[in-house]
Amino acid sequence: MLYYLFRLLGEWGVPGSHLWSYISFRSLLALIFALIISAWFGEKFIKFMKRRNISETQRDASIDPYGVNKVGVPSMGGIIIIVAILVPCLLLGRLRNIYMILMLVSTVWLGCVGFLDDYIKIFKKKKDGLPGKFKLLGQMGLGLIVGLTLYLSPDAVIRENIKVQTGDAVAQVVHKEESVKSTKTTIPFVKNNNLDYAEVMSFMGKYKEQAGWVLFVIMTILVIASVSNGANLNDGMDGMAAGNSAIICVALGILAYVSSHIQYASYLNIMYIPGSEELVIFICAMVGALIGFLWYNAYPAQIFMGDTGSLTIGGLIAVLAIIIHKELLIPVLCGIFLFESLSVILQVEYFKFFKKRGQCRRIFKRTPIHDAFRTLPEQMVPDCQYLLGNWPRGAWHESKITVRFWITTIILAAITIITLKVR
Image: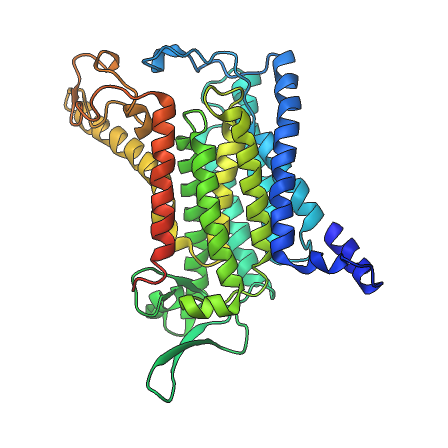
């Protein structure tokens, strides 16, 4: 809204109005606004929740070797994050931009799914909350909306990066003049740096383009559901999911900015995505919201984000990666989320396999994997064999686990950006 107001003032010759045309100015302003809103609204929200005694009941000292009791800590803190994202974007973003619209819709959509899950847990006293199939249905629904929008919208286009030989026989990266709809995505460690879903479906003959878009939509659904659930599993310690997500968003912000800048896109040999610069504003707002939330969520937490927050931020990370055609970098960038999800899947399947044979066997001391780092031998299930029962040795304090996971995510984020030049 403010963007359009100051653009109008610029047409009237009001000094300083031109600043609002700069992405850097609006992005940094969005970060500051989001941080302030998150910190200010967070305090009010926590007091509100405590007055009404609205909290999760299942978190207690039994899962912590240091005996930290977290009963009575308010939940649904994801509302703070969502408000702190939406307000700056509505004020500072170009609301006619298809990518900004998609991100705002995704925020509200996922926020509603997560809120419903938390509401059932807290007010209906059902520990499992919203049944998993309904959460998955909500994530798949958003994936379908995002995929079809990128397929159908005339504004969701790219300019493909190609190499041309100059007079001195040195290859130079340029972008095609016309903007086109494309099923191409960036893939690491490959010379041309692009993978075309349509080429993957080349066995469909003359229908390969349509089949490529079908594959793209399916990939969109899978990526959103996977990252959203991975972030949800990562939300098990104070500051863990918020800190990891903020780091991931910084990396995505860099990728979005270079994708929207034709010179940088040429240098990195990646596709140029017109209009994607508005995503930088959204990402900065998201980073500011998460950092502001950490003010209250860092150890010892005064509030938990709940599924309202974790499902939302995970899904938003996925949508951002898909829009800038970097979804195949997600396994590296969101390696922590992937590891959390795999640890749970492997633990469950391994346990089920041996349970059918009358044996109790597990791989890790506890899952998601971050819980294995704070589990003492006496907290393990008696008479059960553990494949990695001695790893890690002892138990780490929650704050140490959180910071070390942050450091791991920083390394993975750096590797993700480096992959653009390693091929």
